[in-house]
Length: 124
Image (cartoon, rainbow, N blue to C red; front, side):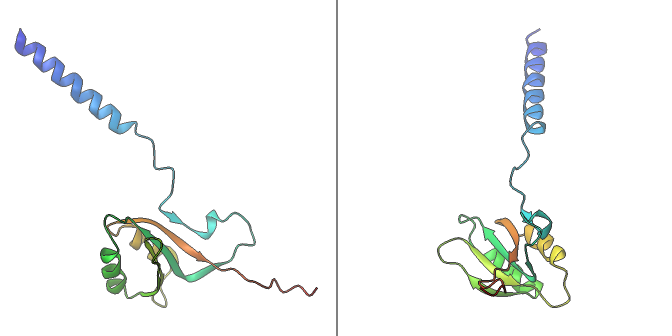
């Protein structure tokens, strides 16, 4: 009888663990942000550069290796924040590159670099 009680208790605990895992809230912050997620229609994005943020605990070394393996180049290594700006190889689609870098160990987010213009071209 005690054995049956232990089996039922173990099954209940296992069911509770499984249900907690399956009802876990989705990550509210997407790892990849594209031009499609831009706030305005007039937003302008680079077709060949990404801003990649990494977990400080993991560090930048896995990303550095991935950049080299992918054939990309680091254009800026941020010191104040844990991230890098990179240029992807010519002929590579930005979405393909973003999808690749999302899978790199320690990567928290990948964003298509946004272009800002100081002069909007209007004469005053």
